[in-house]
Every structure is written in C-alpha cells, then in structure tokens.
Length: 83
Image (cartoon, rainbow, N blue to C red):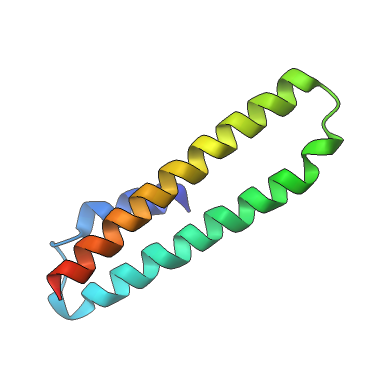
C-alpha cells in the first residue's frame, strides 16, 4: 500500500481529469490499509522476544506509517486543489 501511494503521486495531474477524485479516494484507502497493517504489527510486537528486533520493527513501522500519511495527505490536497 505504501508503494502504491508512490504510484498515485506519480500520476497526480497526469491522469484523466474526470478521474481525479478517484485518485484522491485511492490515496485515502491506501493510507487506511497502511494504518490497518501497522495496527496488526503493533498488536503482535509483544510476541517478539528479541528486544532489538522488536524495536527495529517498531521504528520501521513508524517510519512507513508516517511517510504514508504525509504522502496520502499530499495526494489528497493536490487532488482537492485541482477540483
């Protein structure tokens, strides 16, 4: 889903103008997917016995979630401003 957000960003302003809102909705749905996956990781982190691995998973997950949120917002705002 995070990678798909990158694809969405690459086509903002380059797709059929009549489908611009669909691109915005895609960004919102992809962000929901990333966040849902992140919640699944968080609930299972306590089962990771190796503290270093647990913290590595946490840090990477936080990075992905944060990056996806910024990207989805950027896409959403770009689409909204084009309407």
